Image (cartoon, rainbow, N blue to C red; front, side, top):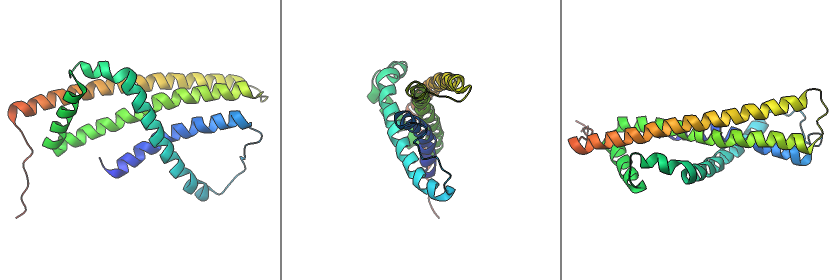
Length: 195
Protein backbone atom coordinates (compact mmCIF):
# COMPACT_ATOMS: atom_id res chain seq x y z
CA UNK A 1 0.00 0.00 0.00
CA UNK A 2 1.26 3.45 -0.86
CA UNK A 3 2.20 5.59 2.13
CA UNK A 4 -0.07 8.38 0.88
CA UNK A 5 -3.07 6.03 0.82
CA UNK A 6 -2.39 4.90 4.38
CA UNK A 7 -1.99 8.51 5.53
CA UNK A 8 -5.32 9.55 3.94
CA UNK A 9 -7.04 6.48 5.37
CA UNK A 10 -5.89 7.33 8.91
CA UNK A 11 -6.90 10.98 8.45
CA UNK A 12 -10.41 9.87 7.40
CA UNK A 13 -10.67 7.69 10.52
CA UNK A 14 -9.02 10.36 12.69
CA UNK A 15 -11.58 13.02 11.74
CA UNK A 16 -14.30 10.88 13.32
CA UNK A 17 -12.18 10.32 16.44
CA UNK A 18 -11.48 14.07 16.68
CA UNK A 19 -15.24 14.75 16.56
CA UNK A 20 -16.10 12.57 19.56
CA UNK A 21 -13.04 13.70 21.53
CA UNK A 22 -14.05 17.35 20.98
CA UNK A 23 -17.67 16.63 21.92
CA UNK A 24 -16.66 14.85 25.14
CA UNK A 25 -14.39 17.81 25.99
CA UNK A 26 -17.31 20.19 25.39
CA UNK A 27 -19.42 18.04 27.69
CA UNK A 28 -16.77 18.05 30.42
CA UNK A 29 -15.80 21.71 30.46
CA UNK A 30 -18.90 23.28 29.00
CA UNK A 31 -19.66 24.89 25.69
CA UNK A 32 -19.45 28.40 27.13
CA UNK A 33 -15.88 27.96 28.44
CA UNK A 34 -14.51 26.35 25.29
CA UNK A 35 -12.31 28.70 23.20
CA UNK A 36 -14.24 28.95 19.96
CA UNK A 37 -12.96 32.35 18.82
CA UNK A 38 -11.99 32.67 15.20
CA UNK A 39 -8.37 31.73 14.57
CA UNK A 40 -6.23 31.85 11.42
CA UNK A 41 -6.93 28.67 9.46
CA UNK A 42 -3.37 27.60 8.54
CA UNK A 43 -1.82 27.56 12.05
CA UNK A 44 -4.83 25.65 13.36
CA UNK A 45 -4.56 23.10 10.53
CA UNK A 46 -0.82 22.67 11.10
CA UNK A 47 -1.55 21.82 14.72
CA UNK A 48 -4.69 19.73 14.12
CA UNK A 49 -3.54 17.52 11.22
CA UNK A 50 -0.91 15.60 13.24
CA UNK A 51 -3.38 15.28 16.11
CA UNK A 52 -6.09 13.93 13.79
CA UNK A 53 -3.53 11.50 12.30
CA UNK A 54 -2.55 10.18 15.75
CA UNK A 55 -6.20 9.88 16.75
CA UNK A 56 -6.74 7.94 13.52
CA UNK A 57 -3.98 5.49 14.43
CA UNK A 58 -5.33 4.99 17.96
CA UNK A 59 -8.94 4.68 16.78
CA UNK A 60 -7.93 2.19 14.07
CA UNK A 61 -6.04 0.03 16.55
CA UNK A 62 -8.91 0.01 19.06
CA UNK A 63 -11.45 -0.80 16.33
CA UNK A 64 -9.17 -3.56 14.99
CA UNK A 65 -8.88 -5.10 18.47
CA UNK A 66 -12.64 -4.98 19.12
CA UNK A 67 -13.67 -6.25 15.70
CA UNK A 68 -11.08 -9.03 15.79
CA UNK A 69 -12.24 -10.07 19.25
CA UNK A 70 -15.99 -10.05 18.55
CA UNK A 71 -16.70 -10.28 14.82
CA UNK A 72 -13.81 -11.39 12.59
CA UNK A 73 -13.32 -14.93 13.90
CA UNK A 74 -16.65 -16.47 12.81
CA UNK A 75 -16.46 -14.64 9.50
CA UNK A 76 -12.93 -15.85 8.77
CA UNK A 77 -13.85 -19.41 9.89
CA UNK A 78 -16.20 -19.73 6.89
CA UNK A 79 -13.19 -19.94 4.58
CA UNK A 80 -10.19 -20.75 6.81
CA UNK A 81 -9.94 -23.28 9.65
CA UNK A 82 -7.28 -21.26 11.50
CA UNK A 83 -6.06 -17.66 11.45
CA UNK A 84 -2.69 -18.95 10.27
CA UNK A 85 -4.33 -20.49 7.18
CA UNK A 86 -5.71 -17.08 6.26
CA UNK A 87 -2.34 -15.39 6.83
CA UNK A 88 -0.56 -18.00 4.69
CA UNK A 89 -3.13 -17.63 1.89
CA UNK A 90 -2.89 -13.83 2.01
CA UNK A 91 0.92 -13.94 1.87
CA UNK A 92 0.74 -16.27 -1.13
CA UNK A 93 -1.70 -14.01 -3.00
CA UNK A 94 0.21 -10.81 -2.25
CA UNK A 95 3.62 -12.26 -3.12
CA UNK A 96 2.41 -13.91 -6.33
CA UNK A 97 1.06 -10.88 -8.14
CA UNK A 98 1.36 -7.13 -7.67
CA UNK A 99 -2.00 -6.70 -9.42
CA UNK A 100 -3.73 -8.96 -6.87
CA UNK A 101 -1.79 -7.27 -4.05
CA UNK A 102 -3.03 -3.83 -5.15
CA UNK A 103 -6.60 -5.09 -5.43
CA UNK A 104 -6.49 -6.54 -1.91
CA UNK A 105 -4.85 -3.40 -0.51
CA UNK A 106 -7.71 -1.33 -1.89
CA UNK A 107 -10.20 -3.71 -0.26
CA UNK A 108 -8.34 -3.53 3.06
CA UNK A 109 -8.45 0.28 2.95
CA UNK A 110 -12.24 0.26 2.65
CA UNK A 111 -12.50 -2.36 5.40
CA UNK A 112 -10.39 -0.26 7.80
CA UNK A 113 -12.35 2.94 7.08
CA UNK A 114 -15.71 1.20 7.64
CA UNK A 115 -14.42 -0.48 10.81
CA UNK A 116 -13.07 2.83 12.14
CA UNK A 117 -16.27 4.72 11.41
CA UNK A 118 -18.47 1.99 12.92
CA UNK A 119 -16.69 2.74 16.21
CA UNK A 120 -16.33 6.50 15.75
CA UNK A 121 -19.97 7.13 14.77
CA UNK A 122 -21.16 5.22 17.84
CA UNK A 123 -18.84 7.26 20.07
CA UNK A 124 -20.03 10.50 18.44
CA UNK A 125 -23.62 9.50 19.25
CA UNK A 126 -22.66 8.86 22.88
CA UNK A 127 -20.73 12.13 23.04
CA UNK A 128 -23.74 14.08 21.72
CA UNK A 129 -25.90 12.54 24.43
CA UNK A 130 -23.21 13.32 27.00
CA UNK A 131 -23.18 17.00 25.97
CA UNK A 132 -26.98 17.12 26.17
CA UNK A 133 -27.10 15.49 29.62
CA UNK A 134 -24.25 17.43 31.24
CA UNK A 135 -25.23 20.93 30.09
CA UNK A 136 -28.54 22.64 29.94
CA UNK A 137 -28.85 23.44 26.25
CA UNK A 138 -30.93 26.61 26.04
CA UNK A 139 -31.04 27.30 22.32
CA UNK A 140 -34.49 26.52 20.85
CA UNK A 141 -34.59 23.13 19.17
CA UNK A 142 -31.02 22.20 20.17
CA UNK A 143 -32.07 19.21 22.28
CA UNK A 144 -34.08 17.82 19.37
CA UNK A 145 -31.16 18.48 17.02
CA UNK A 146 -28.71 16.66 19.34
CA UNK A 147 -31.11 13.73 19.69
CA UNK A 148 -31.58 13.45 15.92
CA UNK A 149 -27.82 13.88 15.44
CA UNK A 150 -27.15 11.00 17.84
CA UNK A 151 -29.75 8.83 16.07
CA UNK A 152 -28.16 9.60 12.70
CA UNK A 153 -24.74 8.63 14.09
CA UNK A 154 -26.11 5.33 15.39
CA UNK A 155 -27.51 4.63 11.91
CA UNK A 156 -24.13 5.56 10.39
CA UNK A 157 -22.41 3.20 12.82
CA UNK A 158 -24.75 0.36 11.86
CA UNK A 159 -24.31 1.07 8.14
CA UNK A 160 -20.52 1.17 8.57
CA UNK A 161 -20.59 -2.13 10.47
CA UNK A 162 -22.73 -3.73 7.75
CA UNK A 163 -20.38 -2.41 5.05
CA UNK A 164 -17.39 -3.75 7.00
CA UNK A 165 -19.11 -7.13 7.29
CA UNK A 166 -19.86 -7.35 3.56
CA UNK A 167 -16.41 -6.12 2.51
CA UNK A 168 -14.68 -8.45 4.95
CA UNK A 169 -16.73 -11.45 3.76
CA UNK A 170 -15.77 -10.66 0.17
CA UNK A 171 -12.12 -10.20 1.16
CA UNK A 172 -11.93 -13.61 2.83
CA UNK A 173 -13.68 -15.25 -0.13
CA UNK A 174 -11.34 -13.63 -2.66
CA UNK A 175 -8.21 -14.51 -0.69
CA UNK A 176 -9.45 -18.10 -0.41
CA UNK A 177 -10.27 -18.39 -4.12
CA UNK A 178 -7.10 -16.65 -5.33
CA UNK A 179 -4.88 -18.73 -3.06
CA UNK A 180 -6.52 -21.94 -4.29
CA UNK A 181 -6.02 -20.86 -7.89
CA UNK A 182 -2.36 -20.04 -7.26
CA UNK A 183 -1.73 -23.35 -5.48
CA UNK A 184 -3.31 -25.33 -8.31
CA UNK A 185 -1.57 -23.49 -11.13
CA UNK A 186 1.69 -22.49 -9.41
CA UNK A 187 1.15 -19.10 -11.05
CA UNK A 188 3.57 -16.29 -10.33
CA UNK A 189 3.76 -12.95 -12.02
CA UNK A 190 6.51 -12.95 -14.67
CA UNK A 191 9.66 -11.24 -13.52
CA UNK A 192 10.67 -8.39 -15.85
CA UNK A 193 14.36 -8.51 -16.70
CA UNK A 194 15.99 -5.27 -17.71
CA UNK A 195 17.71 -5.39 -21.09
